[in-house]
Image (cartoon, rainbow, N blue to C red; front, side):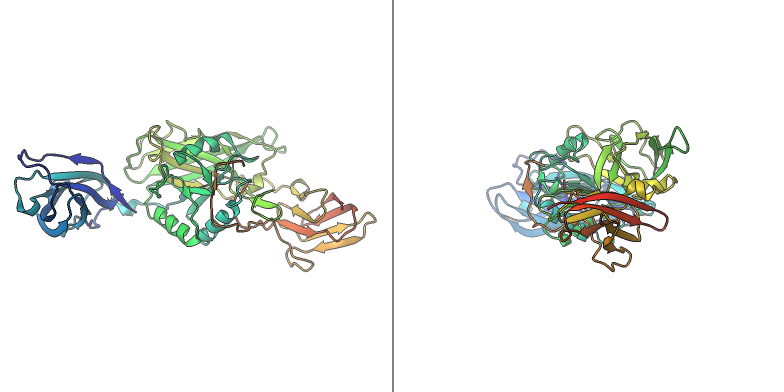
Length: 494
């Protein structure tokens, strides 16, 4: 990732009487370097004088090693600037902090002109110590955002085939909705100003310099989003993480009282994180509801249901960021009956927190559990009768059937017990077994207003029955799986 760095401007290197004509405007380096990988020293030099400068000399100092002086013949107009590339590359030999100072002097051979310099610092890593990098993609989306379904589709296309992105959705940015939690509204601070949707941030890193914070528009094409994700994924990670999940229950045969995750991590190299924080989110998928910009009911995925940690991450858990330092923390999450554990997962990540700078809250690595916490904690799969949901009920057109697991047959019976509609989802022999959709709805963004749109592919366990042609009245829906059968009353109206 190429970044223009301008940290410390060192003025007068000598006390010449002549005014300073040149200044080093920037040094353009990657945000990090690797041992044994040569660096090309590039940047820009500005002409602060009133006349053009046709030539000047340039050298750099890297961790005390001084390069040869390079003579550059390139005219820089008065009040303008020009780029440079030093002909001698520098190869880091040790991990740590690399300090590079570039010095520009002797404009048009005038040795009395005051030299100018700029110093930058960047970390040097041993790439052999890097671990799996998981990019944290935080999307901002709400129900009343007409462009959010289209933004979701583009993100989904961009991430197709990837397993190195952890995707979560804040229901905030364009007002709020029924899926908004207070933590997401607090995290709107990442915008650095006015809010809108659809929007996203990758590892809470500022990629769009036209925005004050790290939140940017969801790009207008999947290709552009893919490029941004590739850029984020290229940053090396040196924190390996794991989430182990258990549960608490007063009665081993009774309901689960709480989810008890333990988040563990280890630093594989020295990292400079001034205020490291550990965050934990509870995520739920396949929430069916309304969505502006979508036709019919909509499936909301990756929804942040609970911020288990402090909003900006828990402090004082990560005591050291030196190589081989470890950390762990046990959490206790009381089970909310409205959350379906077989649709939930956990997301943990390590970040920095700087109260005074929203662009210094980078995420260093993230991890997620499999979606199905029910299976992960090793308890029995819920029965079909416990997971089966039908909506809307009453209905006059479509009936959505969320089974929660694979089923073999859905049958709608009239009041006399006669089958009037049958579907076999595994074979789709009687009508198409479809699910709530995520239709594209343009590529624009909605400025902050009123408020659930989220994201993902259709859930294979949510099926649609077209009942608009049936007479009004009371019906019985019968759903059969390999191990059980469940029924629900359904009312069709006109």
